[in-house]
Length: 366
Image 1 (tube, rainbow, N blue to C red):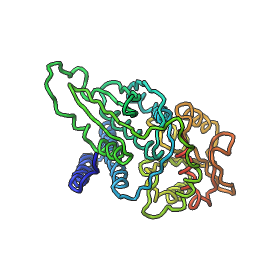
Image 2 (cartoon, rainbow, N blue to C red; image 1 turned 45 degrees about the vertical axis):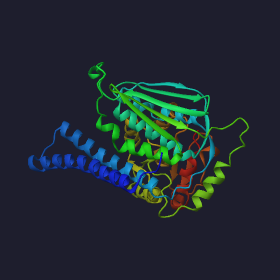
Image 3 (tube, rainbow, N blue to C red; image 1 turned 90 degrees about the vertical axis):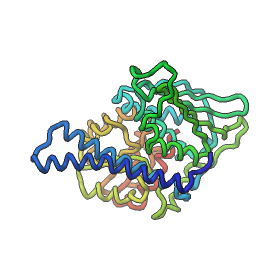
Image 4 (cartoon, rainbow, N blue to C red; image 1 turned 120 degrees about the vertical axis):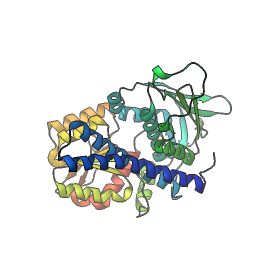
């Protein structure tokens, strides 16, 4: 599939503006009501928060699309276990699927491919974002191989209209608006950048997306380059225009406002979506609604409650990234060098070491 033309990118930019402006207009209406009446009920507060979240999500998708359009991506070609990575994504997002009441059914054969690990991980998350936002049923995932020509096919099937509204009359219905949202644009463009063919079909309220991977790993494939060496080289080239973790979500947990600000400043250039909370209880509530990709927490908060949070998250996502920040002296440690799998860093090393540390931790997952 060819890359988008300037006209198609212009359409994407126009769609981005619409998906940001719509929720913000709804939020402004709620704010104006609040200013007029001096009060807001629980429903109004919920609508306000949803509108702001929708606009924020659209902005985040725009960041990721801009990164794909920049032409500055340097893709690596490494051996990736597609099945394991998909299962890792599903495990990390299990709380979200349970909260939405969506069952994800899997039929996955073991498949290894050559691909850029970070972008492949982004593709699988984009697939889940799009499917979960549009499904009115379970989400069925199937990964298999074609005999000739040899390809891996990842298919995602779900009902995009309520099952009660599905018709057996054979009439062709237009796609639901959400199917062509920015989430779809990001999924499509990430696939194209990876050299993966996205094939989408709709019939009688059912959507079927098939992603075709051509770069399979043969049995005699040579070992890949060292991931750590690649990350070290990547960290060296980080600059103002590089956003290597665009779209990844980081939660910073600390009661210290200055520490939160310093941590945010250290990774601001990486394009991450950053949230902050001040307590373990707030972090637990945040993770209950949906896991971020990494959690950076103040060592002063280490307690039984924090250990319970870590254990609970690890049960759902065994490769989740935790980083503990120390106010005093502490050497930087990767999670692979600690007994509990938690990476550690000193506050004074945040500006120079935190970006590379997060790059390694987020890239090491299967």
